[in-house]
Image (cartoon, rainbow, N blue to C red):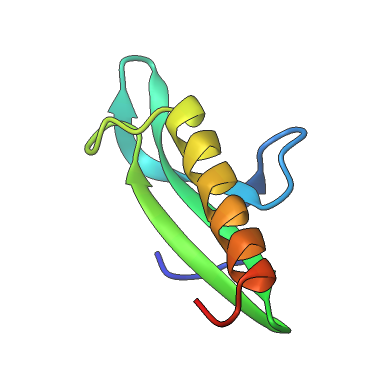
Length: 82
């Protein structure tokens, strides 16, 4: 399951996507794999955070990690010598 074209975008979150597992479920919902896609320095980067059911990563956790990545990138652009 390494294709990027089967990702679904999370509403209102630029760069946060998920992919649903075809058979595995958490409760009655399909298990979701959280993926962050972002462009850094003109190169598209894809980071897989983990699964909702297996790794216990909620949508809120994924949003927090996305915001952390964005803040780190912004800080690095402002402080290139560090």
